[in-house]
Image 1 (tube, rainbow, N blue to C red):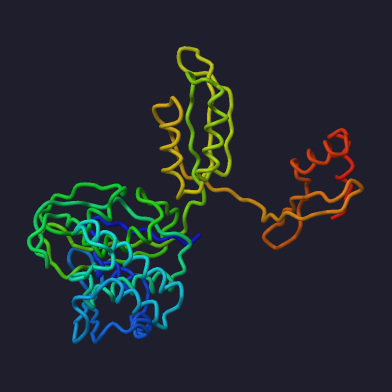
Image 2: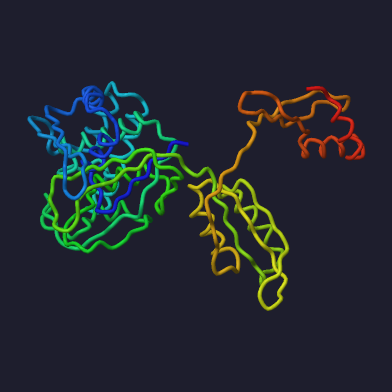
Length: 380
């Protein structure tokens, strides 16, 4: 799995995202060629290598002519009617829709009345569309982010002097893990917040097992004490995480309810094992395998739905056969079989699906064990 991780250690803004994507390997020529497919006015993109503490890339957009006070509907139509690929168009439109809803809620106006001032400028359109172009260029399997740093202070906007984080930024960041940053500057912009919350599947520690590439994207502003850069890491991710907890004080009837919810939350495997805990109490060890991006939801579920006060988890590797379910004719009728193939496409095993066997056994009044033995003789 190719995974991208945005490390927002000193904030996130649209130009920082774009700079990081170019710094990590997206050619500037490719970016410009793709941006030319949408009508966003006249502008010039220049690339400079930043050296504020760490070497990185600063992309500066010089606006020559174009919309500076755009309505959401006009901007959305401009992107929708462009010659960009469908994936880029939809990702950029989703990002601007998130921005528009935030502005509408903050200012108490209908979506149709939303005007983008700072956000609607050409450079912000370049940032949003450019980020979508970068995602398509790298073909990430998944994208994740660190918690978002928040600061105090004030920022000058078209609406006047507003607190930091700006109201629209804070609206976008609802439900996202935040952490405090010791500066009195705006280091997370509405555009940056909208891009990262649209792209990221989860917020927390890095899910990368092996880091292959890193890139740093600088913002234009120089802020004392921090580099004002966004770091992107690209590499191979942990496919799954093991989550485990011991429970010695819960009604065992509740496990059925919890297991159902765990599978609905994305778990790929759940098992219960008896164990002995402190004070010689018999207990149950509840173990779950889950894709990394479902980890936080599953942990929250365990903490809310069981009596446990904590869980342990660690990344794990696993190797599985490629699987396919096929129908096979038998003397009992059609029965579903699960077929396993190795990485070269060679069939390794074929086993009948239990639920199908149970259905046929009940319908034909045949002992399940006898039915199982009969269908096992089916040739590959």
